Image (cartoon, rainbow, N blue to C red; front, side, top):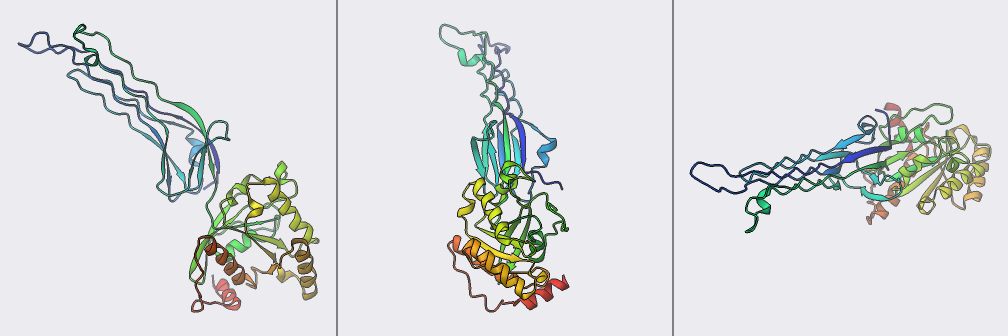
Length: 354
């Protein structure tokens, strides 16, 4: 299924039904009087967050959503039926914006959450409603009120616990494939990843969701490369895992490039907890590891981790570090996990068997 994280949709709630002009006609009853019923209310347009969706691709082909018109009133004081509602079903994490694509209407963050985007028009009054002592045979009724119509924007921001950031070919997709059952495309050229990927990682009996987004390059906030349009998918993350490839000639520059792009994007990404790791260390000898680790530490002011998805080195340590921050941000303390401990060598063996 193709990934789509933004869509423009036209919505229209139903018009109210018209009131009825009717007079009671029955044998042996003279001067029966007006008995026109009211029109039914038009249908509403709702948005609902549902499970099992992770893309807005449905709205690439269905860009109009209209609710039903209310039924017209009828004689014998019969009220018209209410128009059927229309429901936009969207993935959890979808934001709804006005047509200007800036004014937020609602943020759908929980499964089952519903919000009324447009209310249906009220039904018109039938002539029975206008009967008075001085006007006992009114011959007019109200038309129903028109529904609301407008264009809205749907913008999906995936909900994940941890996000992977870095330059292209930093090993983000490889890391995701190694620790989850996700199978993103992996190749040795820039921008292999063209859309975000999600996977569920497990460590010490705990599970959390990882998001891998396309790589950033210098000038991404100005639209260079794929740009920063996918950074919205890590806005909700509790922690970021910043991967810097050991194959970079200047690891310090690679680190600063990504940090500068995160800072230019804003939305608090640089304020999130960050774990820094030197990846693809299986391609380096001991001297190169030490040299690049020291350069990366000097540029970041942090102690970077070392990991290799190919050999499994450092992978469990990285997952545990992510897990600890995620649980702390949720207000929970991580369990001991000693009974479920699995060292890197055993993890690598399991990875080979997969």
